[in-house]
Length: 289
Image (cartoon, rainbow, N blue to C red; front, side):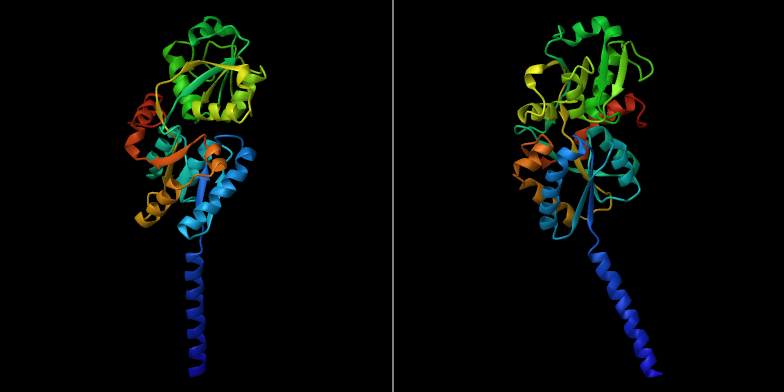
């Protein structure tokens, strides 16, 4: 009887220990929006995963999601611990699940970027005003529907100019969504569309890396400054983990990792940095005030 009791006690202790070990080794998961097409980000994400695994002293798994909304939902349903959001998807995630911005990237030392509208260099238009003189002949491209610079900000600009209300109500010959910034740049370069909206930092990085031909493209509109894309943690993330994440990101100087985000470095960010985007999202009815 005593032997049986000891055996049961030992087995119970083993199960508890195994459960604890499983909990300790559970990976820290990160979801990333498709700022560029997934294949072009793969190697950089592998490097970032290794860097964060060392910095957090914990296994880290990074997944590039096929669309922006997928990352928001993953955070909302507790499937990820951290995410790289666009500013718009961040304010939506903050509203839904309490996600907290802790970092953003720097571009030439500044945590800002712009929305661009670009066209092919051979086209006669040198300004948005000129382009919009014949909207009924223009095929226009946005990026992802949940993109800040590829959709939200340029769509508000076009609304203010009276030529766009929605995907189904507009003055253009056609509207399409390419799904990513590099796809938009290539669509304009290849004359599949007449003009498109794109993230300025990614546009510049695509040109510098010669993934697109800068001589075949020109910028005809630039938005006001936008605060850069945030890295945000789950609402229940502890301060020790947050500090480790910050320290690791702030020390990153690997060019391939930085180039994947059109960045020259990283810096700290807060929820308040995205108030202007929140107000734009309220204006568009994406979130409630």
